[in-house]
Image 1: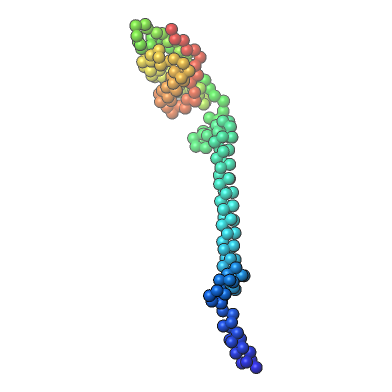
Image 2: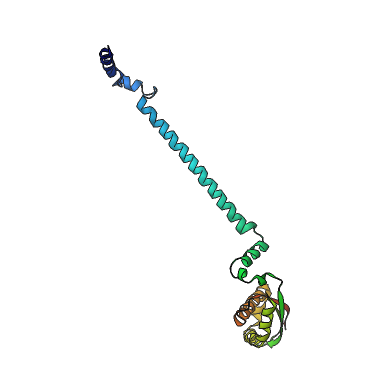
Length: 199
């Protein structure tokens, strides 16, 4: 009996084959055969993976964008200053985190470089902002070198160099640079104007 059943199944197998010609065209819209059923499931799985990885990628990009916005936009100057003191050279010198110390540079009175027929006069009082009292002692011992460097710089300025806020800011930056170079390894935090008089 088992042999008869097998023979009947083999006879029916050709009937299950896909019909050819016009019958095949009419049945294209019908449900897919068993071999075709695996293909849509595989495509569906690929789409799910694509959506999952796309969602993870979008989440990572949002985290990076949020961190960048916080670091560059929302971070207050006080936090930035604390970070610079905590890392690098500031961590090695714990004393630099304390209050600032100030040194008054002696007053400068001099003629500016000629920029026409009329001579102009400059009177300047400057204070240096330093990190520690030890640095103030170093500045006091090197005050003559600092004054000499400042005089050489100031005597070559013209009246046009000092016009407006931009001119004063440029002079302030130049004085800070010269103080830092002349007084190294002392770290000059800032140059503060006490008086600027141009006549």
